[in-house]
Length: 315
Length: 275
Image (cartoon, rainbow over all chains, first blue to last red; front, side, top):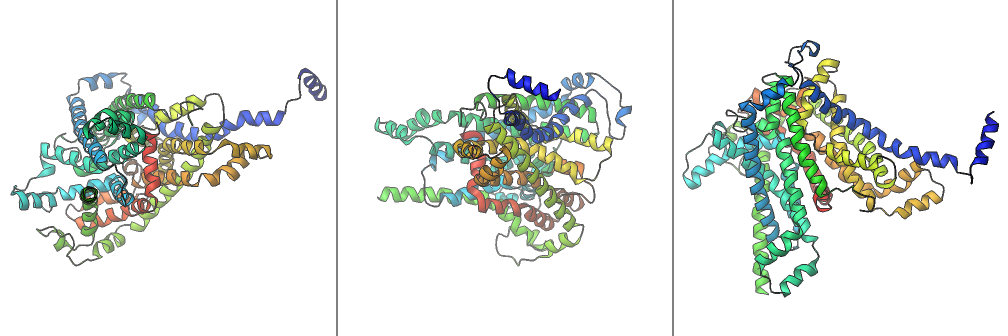
């Protein structure tokens, strides 16, 4: 039978196909992506769906999940009228506004001023990325020490140089907010600086030279030529920082724990505190669904602007 | 002539000031870690002139289970890096080179899940541990770090694969090499620096991660950042010891920076500049 089948098959085909090779070509791509796909499904997508599922239950720490009452969308309606959620959203937005505005302004300004290739630039660049490499926990520890009311160096120099009384930086709502903004600026301005300088140095020199010949002064060159040409880089850098504002929490967790009050509690940290301080796992999951929606919205924006895997021809 | 000189002077002095601002806090940590209690409490900040002591390092290394935490960090860091590079490398290769149904979908969803916030993983991971009873296990942490790192690694390696001329592989195929042979014999040697960059980023994130490690590890499976955070609650004022711990955590990422700054910058700018 088998023999006959093979014969008819061979007859049907107009030309003999290199069968094994064809099969390998079809299966191979999936064999290559499958392991990674499996891990991402299990480690990223499954937790996201799990969070959605848990958000429908009133689950508290100490209770078995099977015993947790199903509450439908109650957690979500509660979230919408929860003053704490609105408060941390407001804190997150203010934090994002100040850090991103200052980091972008400083980073871009410095990149424009220091753009010219110069001997030893690579040494300085190495130094500038150091803050980015430091673990968030350690960043929190360092700045908690510097802002410490008793032994902190910041109080000392403010007193010695400007005669300012020692402040309890991390114990005062406004000062603590300032402190976490300041820390973020220290760590992330170099990121903007490095990205923008890479963009500026990749600009075709003819265009910039042409504008000089046309009589453009430095300011015109910056605002009419250079910045517009690296606009997409600026927007992507900004959106990447924006996503980090919604993802990050470790520095604040170490420096202030979100306090005093909720003055330094970003949305991510609020989820953490809700889940593990007030122990409302179900409700915390509902808030994480909100966080997912926000982050995915920003990701989509980035993707529509710059998708590195868009087509096969993009190279 | 004079003008370029003064411009260069201004350029360098600006860079020096910025470098100082970037380094000063890290230096403060390093210096504090070598101070005795009296110097730490000193009214005037001591930048340089104090008698260095190793007592903080001695303390953290002998009390508690420092070697255990260090080993945990290394295991989780290395295991998740190897996994990420292996799986991510295969996947990036397929996305960059092979044509198949669902390729665009796969590429896009990889980029979407890149940004999943760790805070979102926290509760489900905790729930998983509660339900399954798999507690105190580094495997869960390794798996999650691999998942968290895969999207970025795939993205990065994809870019590197794209830069390799296809002709090399075509020649190998004509010579009768199988896809696996092409991957291992032809591409891998050319991808060394790509894998180095992806490896550095992956290891650094696994090494530095705190939230998931805090939730998913116990007394014996703690990683270094978790152990470091323990010093705050235990001993609110023992800054010397905390800073010694911080210094030890920072060593590997700083070493990477010194040896591979160029590649790290390439990795950081890949996301924005190439778009």
